[in-house]
Length: 516
Image (cartoon, rainbow, N blue to C red; front, top):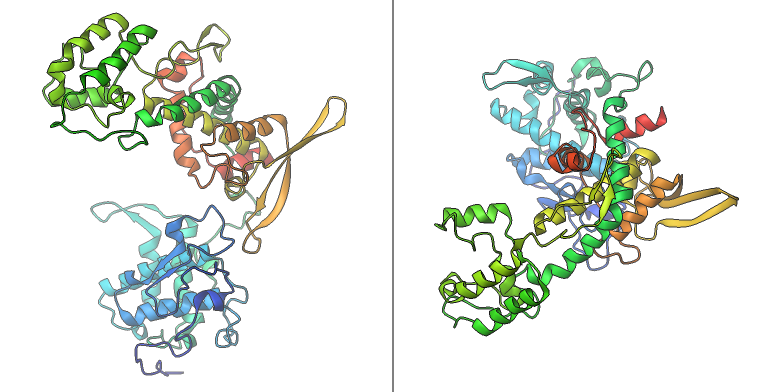
């Protein structure tokens, strides 16, 4: 039985001191980008060339300071670099080391589990990895396996993936033991009899049943019907609405170009405000209305509920006059003119006035495509239509999240008409999963609704420059939650949309549904 201890610790790695992380891992960086070195407490891979859009900025930063013990922090750094650079002259001879480099995403997941494990050891007053026994390994797996309530009672189990991560961190510390400078697990430690982390976690093989379940028909039908209706019927109107929102931006921001900063001590700008009010009167345009939460804020500040000016967005009027704000001390002077204009033209939310009629989703009637909206409501509605296009593209094309996020402006290829009435539509993106860093360019043959969904996403883009990301990084779960809530709200009911029942929906489930 080997009882050899780790080499004497002088605060530096015996094998990786001074290493350029990206150089060792074969990761390319722009010439002017900072290069993380082994001694850095934070390894920043933000600017690595070829990282997938799906990888968020937080996942590109490896923060080792979350491990308080300096010896274990060095262990984590050595282990992560070994997984990024398996061909390093010190790593390659290890008999149970990975032979292919792990993706940055996988290495970050390994680091997160190491942080949990080392912090758990610290809470148990463990001072060295040499003290770890098989009983400790089993205790950590149980700690990560069960979900406890506030009283410590077991109320459920974590996923197989969580359990595998918990087992894998221990297996990695055993397999890479000879690499660690500051501290090591005992040489004789063989947790779970040397079984793999997947076996320990009892991962289902998928041979009898696919782990990913399809979306139920009760959810799929109304969800897809709502998405197609919003995309085809409301889509063109949403494009025009998005354009009007961008046109209104100078009247929504205090620091927009051409806006003069003012304060309560400035003279009352009677002439400027009177000219704007005269324009509203001349064009018979209703004054802009505040959003509901701003009205509530005014009431909390002491405005009377019967004040006719309570809902008027005077800040918008001020910015239309070239002023940064409407100062409350100006109100007594301007009240007569404001109330006179209000009496003539009224007050209404600024977007969606006189909306064009559209057929209802249930075919029973024709009605305005939207009711008047405040600016936040208008932005939200454009976002709902954008989500409808994403749902359509995902549900009917079967593209993975990573592939959707790699779509760019002008990704639609010109349609090919193979025969009269037989048109082939193609869109270009990248395959990321299982591919080298940077992904592999590929094209998807899709049906017309997907092609139109991509076109609508291009039209709704805030800055549609050629080559810009079409959707970028997004959370489908969050977007679908908003979409379902809107479809089930009074706004969706008004348009004749069928309610979408509760239940799980994610991109993997949509892909599985399409495959069936």
